[in-house]
Image 1 (tube, helix red, strand yellow):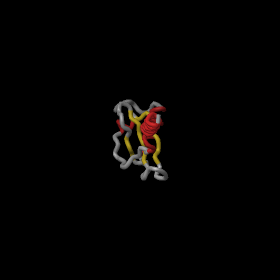
Image 2: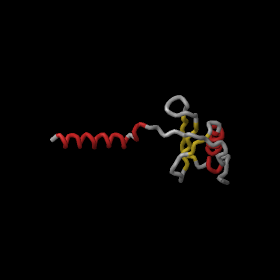
Image 3: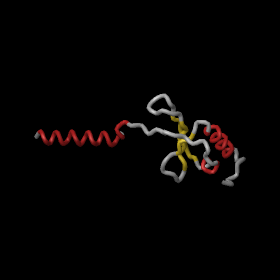
Image 4: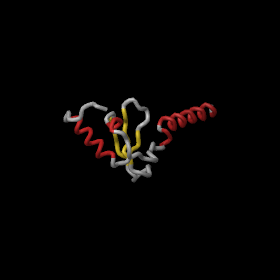
Amino acid sequence: MDVKVAFVIACLCTLAITSTEAGIPKCCVATATDIPVGLLLKVHSWNMQTSSGACDIPALILYVKEMKKPICAHPKVKRTLMVLQWLIKKNKLKAAY
């Protein structure tokens, strides 16, 4: 009976660790500043990583269509991204890229 209880507890602990990724956040450790405009046009969502918390550096995390891993960009890229998204909404930017 004790072996069954120990086995169930071990299975539950394993499930908890694997489902929560052991509580380790995924952080950007380096950022890029020279991201091509064509790649920025393919960004479908983004979020900011702040340096206050679990991650050490501020970064702009870009999720690009057709890419599995996100791109870690310098926060200065946010302004360029916002301008491009605004231009796309206003139909002033043609899909030349």
